Structure formats: C-alpha cells, structure tokens
Image (cartoon, rainbow, N blue to C red; front, side, top):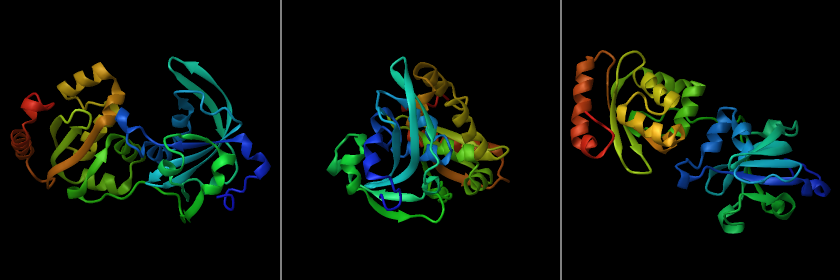
Amino acid sequence: MLDVIPIEREKLEKYKVHFAIGNPSAGRDKKEPLYELFSNTFKSWQEIQTGRNFQREFILSLIYFDKDEWIFGGIYKSNGCKKKGDRYIYDTELVDFRKDMIGRLIIRYDKAKISGRASYLRLEKWVDLFETSQILKTPYSVEPFPGYEDVIVDYSLLKTIISEREESWLTALSNMKGVYLIIDKKTGKQYVGSAYGEDAFWTRWFEYVKNGHGGNKMLKKLIKEKGQDYAYNYQFSILEIRSLKTEDQEIIDRESYWKNVLKSREFGYNEN
C-alpha cells in the first residue's frame, strides 16, 4: 500500500488504521460507511465513536467493500474528542494527501484471519500486510438500478440513493406504480405498501428516508418507541409493478392481495 500512499516509515507510528464497517448486530448494513462515503458524509460518521479509538495524530480510513477488500477513505488529522453521553465525538479534518485515491484505491487485507475483530490498529504493525488490489479509474459509486425483480435494498443504501438522486434509480422508481415490501430484519415482521401518484415508488420511499415510518400507523409507533435509527433494520423490495397508466384502485387491490398472501396484518406491521 505504501507504494500508492507513500507514508514515510519513520512516521507510521503517528497513524491509527480505522477499518470502518457497519455493525450488523445493531441492525446496520456492513457497507453503511461505504454509503456514507457516497454521500460525502463519511467524515461525520467516523467522528462518532464508542471509545477513545483515535489516540494518534492521524487516522488512515479503510472502508469495508467486500470480504477481504477495503476502499481507501482518506487520511484524517485528529484534533481531539469530547465525551457526549456514551459516545466520543472527534474533531477531525481531511488532510490533503492522496485525496485523489479516495474511493478509488482498493486494499486487500483479510482482517478476520489476520487481526480478528479489532477495527483500530497501529499502522506500523500491519502496513506490510496491506496489499494494493486495484485502483479504479473513477471513485466507486452507487451501483445502477438492478431491475425491478432484483431490488433488495437496505435502508442505509436507500438513504444514499435518495439523497444523491442517483439517476438510474430515480428514473426507474418514478416510472412505475406497484406494490412493495418492507422487512424488519431484526424481527422478521413485514409491511406491504403501495406506490402510486406522482413519481410512485420514488416519492413513497422518500418518505421513509425522511422520517423512518412513511406515515404508516404501526411503523410510526415503532419509530416513536425505538427512535428513527431503528429504520436501519428495514429492507425494501418490490413485489410487483404496473404502468403509470394503471388506475390507482387496481394498485390498492393488489396491495390487499399481497397483505393476504403474506399475512402482514396478522403477523406484521399492516393494520388494515
């Protein structure tokens, strides 16, 4: 890695490596920090820590990409931290050193096999085990819309898609009416909803990103009890689609059909 990020060896002890990865046990997608990078909000995401994890001058951020691959998220200078409740809030600044490699440089490092669960490592001890896997021509971004039948998107990624107004997703979700499914990955409970009206799926899913419940009564109660971050447990998919010319009542009837099929009234979040 030092061939691409040429940090002088005598300065390695000034760096802490942060392996940034979402916490699945807390309902987070493993790739959540990658989505934060897409949205240009990774810096603020990283600054919120559960402990004093960055007790060195610099932070070298490697963001989970896939299995043993990590994307370079930049080098940050740590200017200290303050404790707020049960969190430590760091004050950091992105340094102007190989910023051109952010989102492009992919490092191969089998973290689980080599250093286990530790996510904050001393750079000088492990740097020689970091292998440059590839350098992308352009920074990695949200993957294009996969097709209606293949949509399985977690809340954290949906937030990024909506906030970035990713063109292929915006076009696809705005040009079809239909019925969708939300699964609470923590409990397995399901919610069946319908998308019609202006911009159909896009407008409907925008509401979930905005408030975590989309106006649904039972989800509203859930978010009130658990907090909006609970929405990170949601997974969205599309059950069926119809042309924008389709009458709204037909979409509503299909929504009712799927509620009966999935028993989401009896065992999920649909009240009626």
